[in-house]
Structures are given as C-alpha cells and as structure tokens.
Amino acid sequence: MVKLIGKGRMDVMIEYRDHVINQGLTLLRAHENIRCLFTTPKLLEALCEKVSLARMGIQGVFCGGTQLTAQFNRFAREELLEGKVELVPTYGNTLMGLACHKPFDPADNYSVIYHPPCPRAMIEVVDPDEPRKVVEYGQLGRVRLTTLTKEFFMPRFPERDEAIRRPPCEKYPWDGAGDVRPFSGFAVPVVEGVY
Image (cartoon, rainbow, N blue to C red):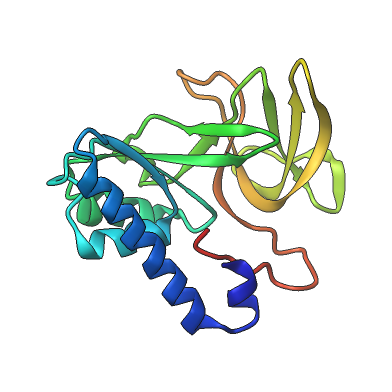
C-alpha cells in the first residue's frame, strides 16, 4: 500500500483497500463467532462505512498506526463503533510486540498513550539531536526502542516515529509514548499507508 501511495497510484490503492474490506466482510459474515479484530484507522473507517460492527457481534477492535490520533480515537469510539464496541489502541512492531494503551479515561481528552510490553521492550522518547538524552515528560522526541527476549536483543533502535513522552500510570508503572506520528526529522516525508 505504501509503495502504491508513494507512486501516486491511488486508484490501485483504493481497489486493493476495497478488496481487503470485502475479504474481511466475507469472513465476518461466514463466522458468527468472531468477536474482535485488528485493523488500522483507515481500514476501520472503510469497514464501518459498509457495516455496523456492533450489529455483527464485534466486541473489541485493536487498532493501531500513526494515524490513530486523539481526533480519530474519539471519532472511532463515538461514531464508527457507536459507543458499543471497545476500542483498544495499539502500537508496535515485530521487534517490540504490541504496546498497550493506557486504560481509556475521557479526562485524557482522547489522547492515545502507549506503554510497551515490559520487560520485553522499553520505549524511550529522546532528543533527535542528542539521542542519549531522554526528553522531559510532555516533550516531543524520537521514539527509541530496546527489545530483550531469550532469543533476541536490539538495544536503542531509533524508530521512524516521534512521540510525546508520557509518565507511568497505575496499570503500567513505566514510561509511555503518546501522540505518535511519523518522525518529522527525515529529509523526505514518510508515506503513510492503510496497511
């Protein structure tokens, strides 16, 4: 998808997106016991244009990507999921696994705040010009990831994202990252897709 967008092939990207949505709808209609799904913001929106997930029996949606902003979080909860389906914002990749969202609290003004799967991974938000310096809470910086499992160790890997450093919360007593978006320090803008 990203390559199609980068090449300006929006017609082919839309055809592919529609194909993915139709495949998803076919599976949802064929299997009445599906209760949750993983998707991206753009695919969730396209899917909800065609069907009510609440009426299909979906109880939870794991949704991730840099396009999951506070505005989309509110829109998805209130409009797309009709206030009837639990939305669980997720952030992650194969190096880290999935970072959980801080438990939803309207007082956070729909901000999306992720906490990595400790002890497997650790997220740091660092100064892009001084990568050894972790920024203060509430400041924007580049996401840096450290992963440690029995089989794999990846120290201080700079992600292609930037975020605001967020403090620990009761459920996750370690730092988090909020308002994740593509890193603005790249010479060429990052192409976001619907993948």
